[in-house]
Length: 248
Image 1: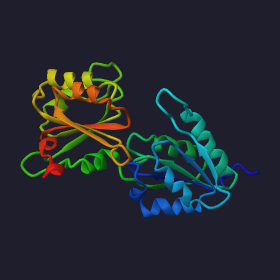
Image 2: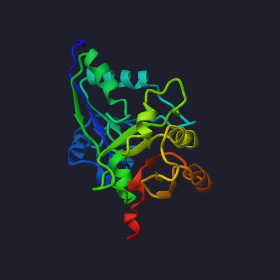
Image 3: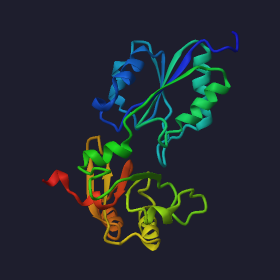
Image 4: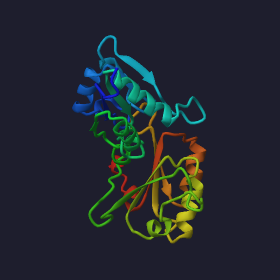
């Protein structure tokens, strides 16, 4: 077979977990796929929509569980596309928001494989919304910043300007920060964030068993630990977290 690509790859953002929040474009892509590479945060019920005979490949990266390396995922995308398949890479959230979709695009482009992207509803926005927390609100916040919580403010691998974040006056959204929540909150407070700033953690926002824990930047880590919050979860810090829309 020629090295020229005869198939293509479609990067589909599956949204925050509820099958109803998959876009129509994403659903259409699944229905015409020959191969689907999916991860555990995608709305897996949507896989019922694929055609009979579609090859389904689990390439999830489960914390402290089974792992598929990014290199192996890239290789699978290229391999199946070069064999002539329409390959859907089905992810949770949006492929370009901490989803490594750009890395997969680069790998395909290098191999001569055409790529299409179908945006998904990011949990960074949907999670707070479903918990009644707007990221902006007139008179309270005119901006929001989304950061990774994989490492804390004092970790040498952090690329975030935590001092600017702590003093920005805007809403802070932290993804993948459950394990480092205490360090993150303490680091923000040490850099100038008022300890009594409203804060909330939203777990499994669009999935069964969702949890919303509210407090302040100073109290939230202990409250989350007491409630046994586990990933996937996101944290919102800022005045908007104190609005309590769901309680009105």
